[in-house]
Length: 104
Image (tube, rainbow, N blue to C red; front, side, top):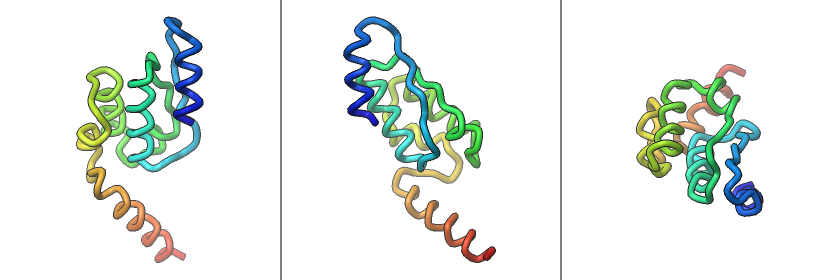
């Protein structure tokens, strides 16, 4: 997605472009994708489910705002999300899956 969006950003030139979020994705992927898109010249983002359905929507919002408005990279922006570090993302995903399996 990022490569394709880069071409669109280049074609748009000086026309501000907002990038949609797409499907549900892991936090690390969302933060890294957002960082790359902003670096490529996107004006801003329009995300829904990756914020609204997040376990910490306020933290995810703060992390994305840090990337879009403050020029932060994904790794330091992750500190705004409760219980998430870029290293712990995989561990958190495994814990969620394990909890779901136990409920079955």
